[in-house]
Amino acid sequence: MAKKVVIDPGHGGEDPGASANGIIEKDYTLEISKYMANRLTELGIENALTRDSDVSLDSTTRPKTAQSLFGNGNDVILVSNHINAGGGDGAEIIYSLRNSDDLSSKIAAEFIKSGQNVRKYYQKRLPSNSSKDYYYILRETPNNESIIVEYGFLDSTGDDVDQIKNNWQDLAEAVVRALANYIGVTYVPPKGLEENYYTVLKGDTLYNIAAKYGISVDELKVANNLLNNNLSVGQILLIPQVQIPDIPNENIYIVKSGDTLYKIANIYGMTVNELKDLNNLSSDVLSIGQKLIVNEKNAATLEKYTVQAGDTLYNIANKFGLTVDELKMLNNLNSNIINVGQTLNVANSFNNDINDNTYTVKSGDSLYSIAKKYRISVEELKKANNKTSNLLSIGEVLKIPSNNNDEYIVKAGDSLWKIATNNNVSVQALKQKNGLTSDLLSIGQKLIIP
Image 1 (cartoon, rainbow, N blue to C red):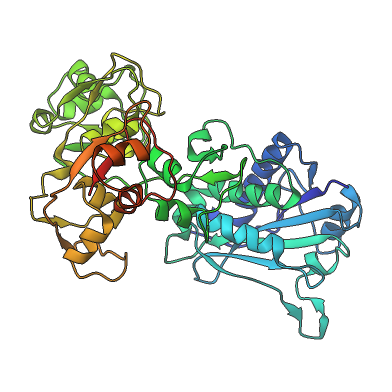
Image 2 (image 1 turned 30 degrees about the vertical axis):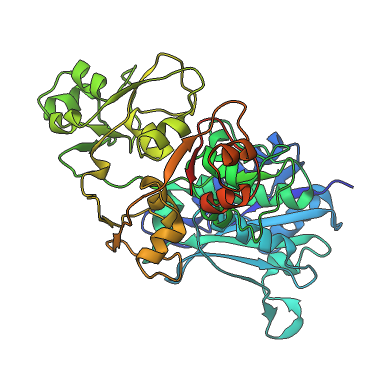
């Protein structure tokens, strides 16, 4: 029997719940719940809301309303949405004494993927009767699989306030992903966010998926809480968004609410067309948070590349020592689609502070991304810096060992055996040098020849 979901927006009407920092609990729980209802409907999961407007539900009415929707069977999941208070930081999930922690643990894992830390998922007993749940919404909905989700603290001194205000949809989507996985329904990302996810195909490996998106295998595994390298066809992977190193303020402008190209161009003594040409913009549409190159000096460091047949963002980024996200940002690309003959900005001031011998670690860096930038292996980088772990600190200065290795760019028809044979090395040595866990290659991939 297919499971149904009752979504309960906490508080409402005369009961506002907690409030601080411009956040009123009853308003956010309603928005989160309505979003979840729409997404579950899109996924084909039957659901209903205990309230869909700002009305009051007392401790007697709320449980009765919840169980009036689909009954009191164990085929019903009740999700009661709340925003926490008390100065902590992070999400919490409370599950009923009659149920296991399976669903709660899945929600916790998805919160972590979305960038929200999880304090704990747990059960709480009524002090006067330890056989009963502490919270009435769990206690008074017998047989249902009932949970309370606290999305964060609205009075947090950490990052919860920003996440609740700006990323509440991401947090709600995390719960939707967990519910789909738990119920056994194929998860499909919401429209516009498809590029944040990848569906595993036959023959895929963590390595080739990571390479496709310009990230490391470790970053992909951490983002998806993977404990090994095993994948299954149809599995949905969250693609972590690589942080792009900040560029000095005199070179870059971050778009704010109310900005227009005309206004920004005026500030920097440019014409709108000059600003658009500098940033490869084809329209006048801007988005808040978008980064624009505004300094002519920085423009002088840019080189142009014309897209050739067979090119991908990944192999172009690799060719010029960039990440895929850096390349996309330089060209204001919202997707990975490029066209033959398209002109791209391919070099910039990201690497101006790098000399031949040292590198200063920035936010978003990993040993993998730095090693890739210098065409060396992670092991060579670790050995040169006497590192025994993969941990890095922002501002840390790394020694860059000289690269005495040859490189080979994979072409159509290549195989590891063919490349190894032509370069008088073994397939095993070639795989070990490049951190390969399978024999699969992609056109444009760069290999270090040991």
